[in-house]
Length: 418
Image 1 (spheres, rainbow, N blue to C red):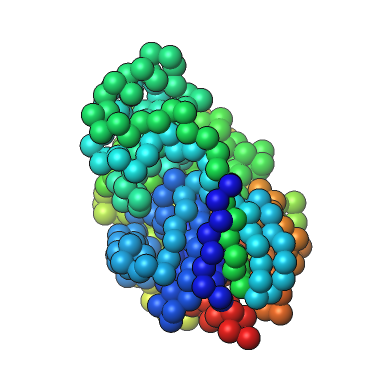
Image 2 (image 1 turned 30 degrees about the horizontal axis):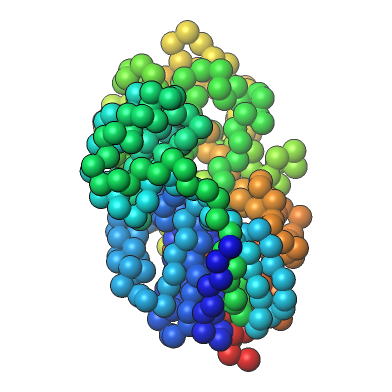
């Protein structure tokens, strides 16, 4: 076990997505020591998986690259990847936090040359691409990875694979004997920026996710549309490369449903309008169908919605999809149009489930006793120095997330300077 002692008033930020990066930078740039921890091998969170984000249709590099540079240049921030919180003792102003650092099996000698991946015979599902393709068991998580260092899935390595990756590395960076480490940090306050997880589409049995390659989620579309994604930026039927002539968007897939997520996830309507843009850019003549309960694009997003709804080849049906029926050459969406009271069965080449945002701590459980609402969102307790940020606090778009993460940093600083 090692101890990391920051100056009095250090802040721990749990989660290294856009929310955690924002909170960490805001706290560090006014002089606080910051420990920034992330459970995955890289920082960037869900934003790194997007093709573009609204309303300006910016690629994720637009917001992440400058933040990565700022983190690298700021000596007040100490970063830990593959790290989770295991315990917290003490109180506000004087917390002792135990962190567990999982082995990467690649040390700091790594130059990201890729020789280990080239030599590795073993493959795994590409988690970053949501299983839409494979990667080697020795891999760079994605092209924007920060830190830019490979990671090895040791459990997926065969004996021959282990020998191959070690032999291929001329920098002596592969270390398959790495062990889990424990680190203790002393901090005044903790910002929980643990983000969100796409709601598990397999839980909605009537929507048949997993039974057909022609049924995907909104995050899968993001990865397909991304130039660095599994299809090189092309939206196609997975596992076939078949181009589409029609597509159906299924809104509120699991959201606003007492059996799943009872709340509106805030971003799904805008995500669908954004993805309509991807489709139209690639398929000028494709028919687009959007099944919805309500279209929620408040304030500054109204013009964005209006432009997409003006598409002559887009049809909007006010009705929740009750069933998706896999077909030999596509799927059929079954719904009732609540305006005409007619039952609709619409066949499409590809169905996109607009799954909602579930707070990650609701899925994996909180490592300490946090105040949380009935949906698993963290409630800030400023007196205790436990601060919620980003989508750990509420379902939000990127702009709102960065705003409330700045506010979270301010609250954490106030606790540290009492």
